[in-house]
Image 1 (cartoon, rainbow, N blue to C red):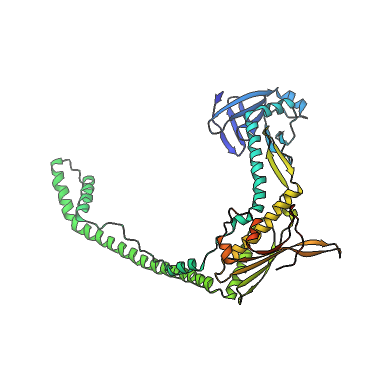
Image 2: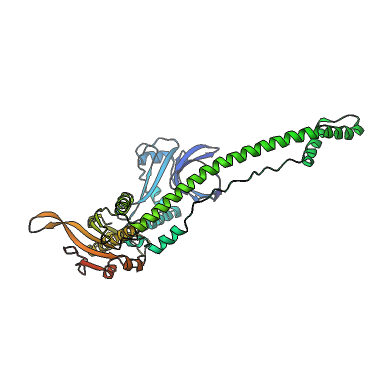
Length: 429
């Protein structure tokens, strides 16, 4: 084992300095291949410690030249790339500075035997498993992000406790000059200026210097301090006026928002729905049309659901051997996850829209998708569920734990779904 430090010049690329010359190596952090005049070496180490191991795994450059289609007899850069293919199988590629692949089996086997290669592969496998699982969970866990419903009492309490913030002016921090402090300052100045060869006279001369300058210096210092304090106070008045106006405007906006939530003006509700739909971000693509009936306080939503083809199609498992298995999901798995996704969207939207105004007491969501009408041969919009969400029941549910498919049973709904999660065409509520 050796100990050395490296001068890093870019990610994955280091400049190696030695008495014999300069060579360049590249690769994953802690593992690289160097091809130079003295042969081919595998470099492995512990990142951040300066400790590394270097093993010769190839002959001199002339042998490399024969096995790698004319590699020049000079120090060269070799890039190590470790990855996973579509099926989760590890891949290793080593290329020279001209982008030509190095196929020497001895080099490849040596890299694969290194602990760094194994650690890199294991890390990629774990990362791939997380990525595949997270992609699926973003679709099937939408209902878990359903917002908590605020009540009229919550908003009323917030409104009553609301008040504009008041800017608290800063205090002037510089202390008032004193003659005592100024006398010390003049004493130090006198020591620098008055250095007579007749040292027994220095004290008297310095005391006279202090007495002669103290009063005038104090007046000047006090005036400068007072002017600076006055400027600071005036500036704070300007800052306070500006900040108080800013705080009051924010208070008025927030107050109006709370009042609008309580009043439930139809124009306000329509405006808020438009804003929400323009800002909402979900992994599944969908579209919404809506209608609000202020007389019965009901919001109707027609929801163009995402397609099952939009769902993640693969699943990943880490085998006992440590390898990763990436397979296509079964049709039943896809249909179940699709059912969770489209059911979860209904509850997520319901919670989001209930919070627009406390006056909204019902939300009817009807979800449809595009299907083949076997009678006509045309692709048509066909409804597959409809649910009437009521504010009181909705507020009582804990969506972070509830199954979105089973949660339909809490409300009046129209849905025909088989044990295999096939949705039949329905008529709406």
